[in-house]
Length: 481
View 1 (cartoon, rainbow, N blue to C red):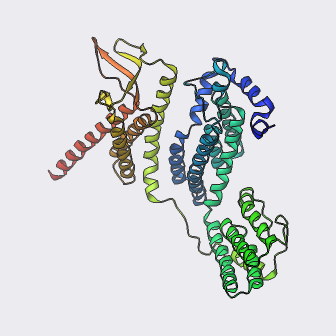
View 2 (view 1 turned 45 degrees about the horizontal axis):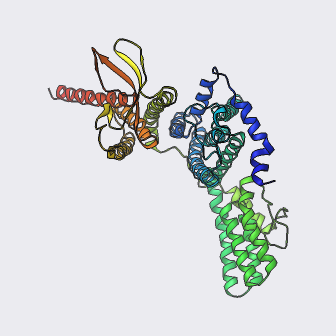
View 3 (view 1 turned 90 degrees about the vertical axis):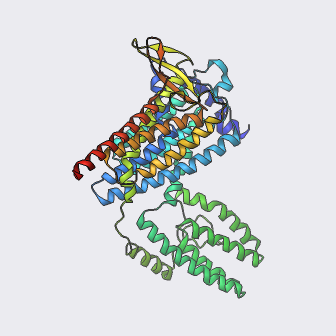
């Protein structure tokens, strides 16, 4: 039996469970679509800005610090998860359910055939749950677990993934949360890590001097002390084993060389799982998994570092630019998110070219626009896709930076609406190559070019800026008069 059949197919159970979960009634289809939408990576920017806004509104400094810490951990975890999930998807290229079962699969939207493993939506759901878990109470944690299961079920119900893909996505997401926890420590942990790393490095420097002097036994003993001091943190821990490998090669001790090679590979797993044999000297003459008593002179150093770890900690607040911009960025992302949700519903649920009359002057339609707002340059030769995408990205960066400055509320509101509209449309251009329009106003046979919610945000935002300029001008004239 192959590893794929054992670990992925589960001897046929993976496919059987998928077929059972995929047979959903029409009544549950909107619920599955909503779970899949909420579990999309596109929600990550909204989560980041919402956490930033929450940190600024927290009444206690400790709470603000905890939320800000989780915000940065979420950003780092998302980066790792995106890279690792992409490598697995493209490297393994497992088929999706429609490629295996064909037309019997209940599919919502376009049927995808490749890159099933792991489920990206499940990865993102695990990232979100792992990030929010330390910040919320027990009842809310139950809701988080419900959200995790909801997103996983929705990917099965929509015919996008197998159960094994969902489980792998959850596992990858939680592993990336763990990685982020090590890479983004608390202030106290960072201070402690700096001091412990410095103490371990002093031992390694002394070992290096002894190594160059040819005193290999003394050098190895100092490396063992460096290992005891630094094994709680990955960088000094791994560095010590690398030096031990070098010393083993110099002494032509093949047992030590083989042992250190193994330890270099298992050290990352030990830090990810939190299972470290504290006090272990790290040499190949002892088991890599057995804790050992710490010598008194090293314990004295560790105790001193622990007692002094708070000496240079200063009150930490989120930076002022985050306080000024978080609320407006959140509004912009809400506009972009609402626009994308409607576009997704139109693109997957309404045939292209369809038109649903609502009044004698308004239709709900499904149109594609390769140009700018209101179909400007829609008939150009294709270059406009890249041009408008580049313009929108540059505009989004500039607008996002402008919202970090203190501005009148009307002006900031206008900029945030324009930013949300620009993001809503540029996502379409990058993802689809065209913008989905769904609003069609007409009068006596004359139709205004179809548009969408993002276009409305841009136009309303521009109108607010113009109105704010006139208001400021009149106020200035009144003050001069």
